[in-house]
Length: 255
Ligand code: ZN
Image (cartoon, rainbow, N blue to C red; front, side, top):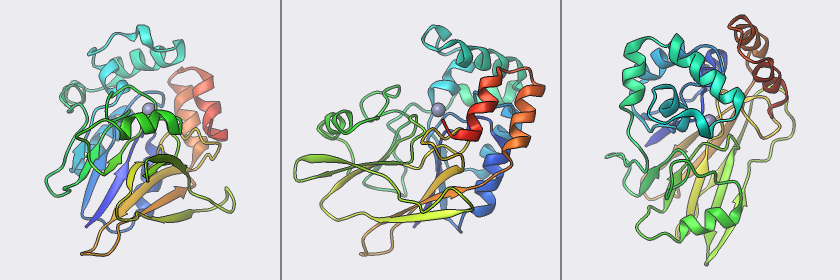
């Protein structure tokens, strides 16, 4: 089983296309939410995500632009982009976003795994540190391998012998494409974030995604990917749409 993991595409068409071009062959795709918001190609990205099939869990930006949550919890820039997204999206895409399932989501073909946007206990919680991840590992009833997004930080956490440690891929540079493979040890539990396709925040501007592989009795593996893309084109689209300049600038630094 080869599972492609996309998260936080945020209407960034150029980043998504670069990830699709770089993705290895896969059997199934799971999308961890925030298909739209921030960047300027929501219709094109919704079209491609829907054409890929697989499973999609809803993110806070997917909810907000469809009116399922009010914008009072968003900062000003996020709220402006959410309103713009709402008025720009075709109604069929808005309907599709509105009906995305809330996490935790399970997928028939993937026993023992769970998929969330924020955290297993709260779809809006940010898993930014080991203590928050630890509290989530301790919530009974959850899977041993859980995939999350929302923080836009590639990596995650491992729970071993009652303790939780952060995990992050280690890349030599921020130039060109790169990948980093992690072997999931039997008996340990994992929270894995494939990173953000369309608005990375770990200081690496390259688009991020991951592939989970499990063959027979062999240990499962997660390969993290980083892919350069045409940031200038994404920035031009943001500025042409009169979205806040900050949304264009941040893409260049991955912050
Ligand atoms: Zn997001």
